[in-house]
Length: 277
Image (cartoon, rainbow, N blue to C red):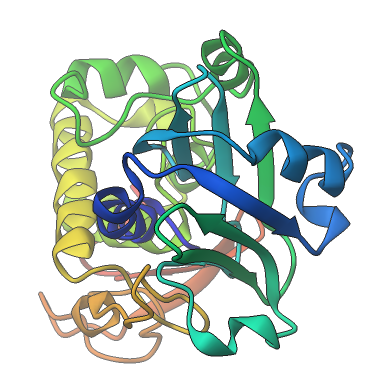
C-alpha cells in the first residue's frame, strides 16, 4: 500500500501540472530516500531537468526527463506526492523532499514510515532496471490475457495469493487488491498457483482487472496515510468485499468473512465462496 490504483490516481493528478515544467531547485531531506546515493548528489542532478511525462510501471511512478533520465518513485507503505505542495510542507517533519518548479509551484514527497525510495536512472537504464526486478505484465494492458496469466502461474506451488504479491504475474497488485480479485474469482488464497484450471485463471484475470479498475474509479483506498496528489482521500475502502472485513457477512453468500495469513500478510476470504479444493 499504495498499490496500482493509488499510484495511478497520483500519476493522473500529477501529470498535467508537471509535464513541461523545469526543476529549478531540489531539496532531499532524508538520506534514506536515495541511498546508497547521497541525497545532495541526486538533488543536484535533478536541478535543470525538464519533465516530459509522468508515467507508472506497476507500483512505481516514473518521471520522464528531456535528458533521457528517469526518476523512479516507489511509495512503499506510506509515501505520497503532493502538488502543489501545501503551505505546511515547510515545517512538516514527514516531508522528505521538496522539488521547486519553474512556475513557482513545489512538489512535496511525504512519507511517515520512511520506506519509500527515489532512484534517478541514467539514459538507457530503465528497461534493465525493471527486467532485473522481474516485473510482470501491466494487468490493465491489452496483453494481460488469461493465457499470459496462466503462463506466469504454471508450475508454481506457492499459494496463488503469494504469486500475485511477488509482482511476476501482474505488476502493481498488492495485498488489498489481491484479496479482492481472489474473491471476485471465487479462488481460495491458499490454492497452489499452478493448480488453477483454465476457467479459474480466466476468472482470476477478470477479477484482478475488475478490482483494479474499481480502485482507480474510487481514487484508491485511504486506510491510514494514503492521499492523492491533491491531498484528497480515496474511497475504495467503501467498496471492499472481503479485505479487512473479518467476521462480517460475505456480500455474495452471507457467510462470515475469515482471516488467515499468506506470505506473512493478513488475508481475508469467504470460506464458502472460495473453498480450498
